[in-house]
Length: 349
Figure 1: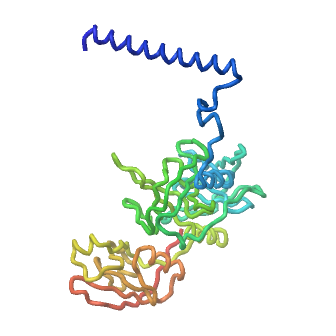
Figure 2: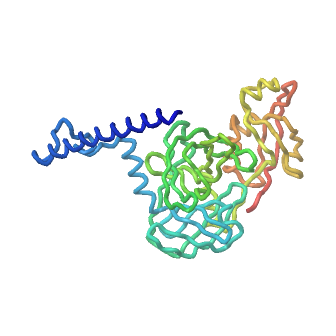
Figure 3: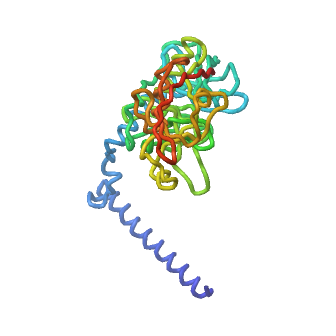
């Protein structure tokens, strides 16, 4: 660009600035002479308070009501979040937040920092239970995560990067997810922003009830909105066992399930349209002893129809180690339907 052209642009900018200044000055004189700007010239923002939409008001209400129950959880290795679920000082966070610590530091919303005793944890589902020696604490109400539907509102509160009680919103993007690269299954997927430090904090519904415990976010260049939470029913089951017995015992089959979806059906010409395909088998597990094979498709356990990995996890939560069940599976490539009796194994955390 030439110097002459640059000079011309500069003078245009100066001229516009001067014009704006003259107009502003005229408005100021008008205001001084008549006690304020003419009504037709008053910006809406100054004329009245902007009314918030119903959805916005609801998020504000949820944040105000639940934020006092959200805490920070600090160890020598780092920090995360947690949520108080009982007024007598019981809170839930992630197992990976507390690590192997038996004592952690809990930061309350009112500024107090207190000692928290780790009562127990379950690494497989990434849930830990902590108690602080206080009563009459603000506790968040719990929902029934089995009643969730895709598309409903999801609100996350936590301490990402140490920014305490940060609120983000989104929806329940999917249910019964298995987070790739982890051992976690039956997860709630959400696009509510979850970042390092959010782990262990609550994921809430539009009524302010906890539907999940935020646990992990999957990221890659250009990828956003892939956060996951442990369903609160699963977290509550862990907490109940820890408070009752000091440990977690669960029934297991010993398989790694993956949902059958249209892509798998087309790719491998599967003989069924729904179920869970066995992608791995634990050595010396009940599944191995019973003769379950890789690529077998589980379609039923006893009288329970299996259409997702979440169905398997929920069924196992309702049973105890040592129970005898019958697994109905379809074996590719011929689609042979097989019923296999199996004795459930034990996993202890």
